[in-house]
Image (cartoon, rainbow, N blue to C red; front, side):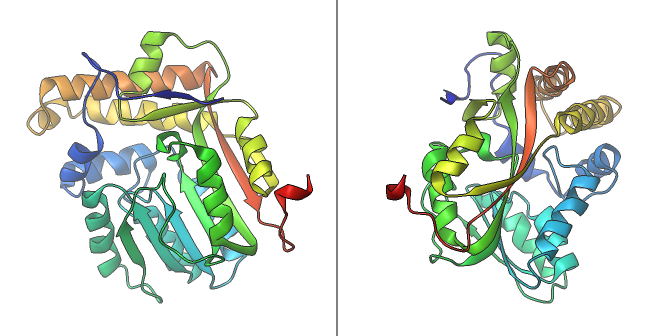
Length: 285
């Protein structure tokens, strides 16, 4: 089963996403992203540039298809995928400020086909028609979505037969994690942990055929450490934008995330699954 933790109270609790998006487009934030990731795509999770290229390749196997990016954040990585592949793009996120960022980026993105970004609760049934998309991606956000059984079922509904799901989960329990470490790692909001193999089982039960599953935990360790160093070297400038408590909480989060990944106690997995050409009926099992 999954373990759900609400944002913890106390010293490690801080509102991450609204604060992050409020200064997302300033020069300091962009500079930190360039140093941590190698290029500023407006990203903020654990995806590397190599993984971004892999995503482009996977989307490109559905030429000029329709892509839905769930929990799209600022939209930057998905917009870059759309620009590289020519796909039609839709993005959904619960944060209004994130969607505004995505719309602004899309306006200057010169995409061949215009994208659609809407505010939506990604834990609930999404406002699209059945069989509407060729590819659905959800990168590092499944940990925030309640009831992934229902979420996977809705994604199955939205994909056309033969459609593809690309999913990453950065909080798969693969070792012993203390309550203190868990509270720190869960400090950015609603948080769900799954044991090894749980996502695979739920994807199959939803009707998907799993095509690939690989461990990408090293990416979490590397990105977290680079973000920590980039922020630490700009401490004085960041303290002018963030209060000291917020800065400390963010640095503690990044250091703990890197430690949990380096020791392979909380891992990240990359999944590729497909909706069969002939739809699977769970009543037949």
